[in-house]
Length: 345
Image 1 (cartoon, rainbow, N blue to C red):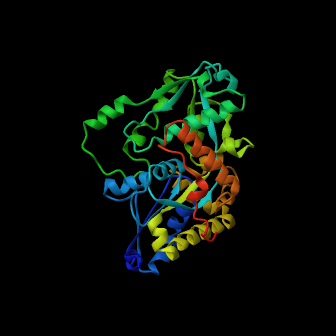
Image 2: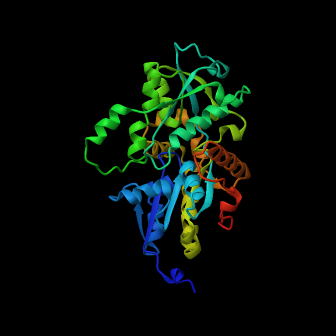
Image 3: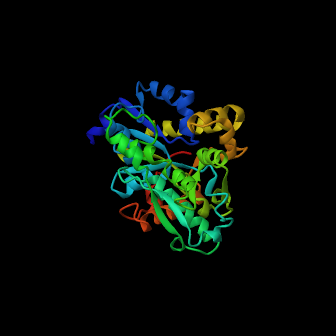
């Protein structure tokens, strides 16, 4: 007998990204915590831990008995790197994915990007540079709409050396944000480069993108997030992965199913409570209800659906192939083999 199966589960660790997810609402509503309290199991937030190693599990998924719901890039990278995880659900909430320029750039269409400088984040110290990967993906998918490839533009690394220098002179402090130190520091590097004229175009997505585009009067070249082809819309957030470590699933299948049930309960509640859902999503996204409406549309509450939809599976495979092709992950993965399809959804 596997000794681990007889070991009681004492703590469930959870984490999610600052985006619309059923897990985020389940946590905010207290339903996940209530369900696990019935098992006498404590629930703890990975991102709010005092331990940097624990917080890093948001990206590398190394913490046992943990669940993560959010952007797929860290989950794909961890699995590709040998971390034994399983996908227990996929959710797809379309969001704006903007290629942005200054209004005085002369760039009006995607075709006009040919020969221009495209700014991409460069977070060399991050566990996985998801912001860089999603920017290149957004650019590549946009260029496909006019039969162009990424090699027609100049990719320019963007890094805030001034902020990095200031950080190096400070002692480390606990960071309970979703992003972690490196990504947090450099999240605005490409925006600064665009405003200074060091690059001609950048990629941003979600509520943050909507607000930045408005506040700085930027021109939207294309919103690839509204393209009719789901493959061209697929990126870090489309679809989003709900993952657990494999030992957790094998040793505590009832509790893993309870996670899924809590997520589905939260999503069903969202479908029936639009106005309240926007308030929850604004909190999750660290934004306002207005920008959540702009970024995710007037039916964002209906877009919260976790399942194993075949379009999501195909899009996730295409996206993971992109990550391998661009050397963001060490080896190709088989998404179908990654799914825990015996989960009841």
